[in-house]
Image 1 (cartoon, rainbow, N blue to C red):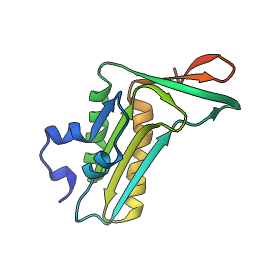
Image 2: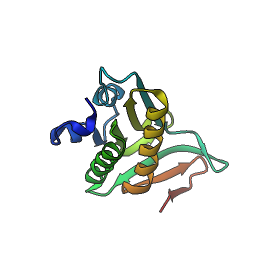
Image 3: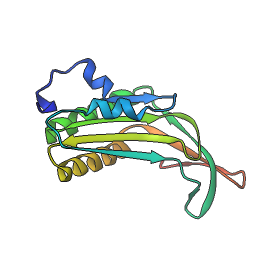
Image 4: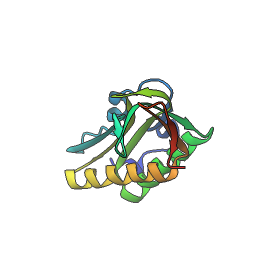
Amino acid sequence: MRCAERPKGDEVSERAIISDEPLDEAVIRAAVGDAAHGATVMFCGVVRDHDGGQSVRSLDYRAHPDAERFLEEIVERVTAETGLLVAAAHRVGDLRIGDVALFAAASAGHRKEAFEACERLVEEIKRGVPIWKRQHYADGVSEWVGL
């Protein structure tokens, strides 16, 4: 069954999560599981130790109070437009190098569709969810990125 045919309700919130706790890949993967789909694509956005030629020691994400609603709307829109199962979870709060900041997933009958839907989901999340990142550099300077 295609996700677009599934009833709306709590299943959307299970596919669109913002959390100040470490993210669980299994939850996002399960949210897009479907016996009819032979391809599941997972994107894992990890905090890296550098940006723009500077050494990064940590970062923090801050979210607008309605950020999860924005994420739910994006998940619903990508689902409706592609007819595929998609899900995402974004972490907020203080993160260290190697921590997962974002899981995004899509499943489809074939890999090309799943890759395309997952990439589209990530791009729309970056554009449309009001979450802001502050990077803390090794030299002690901090700056907000993407404002």
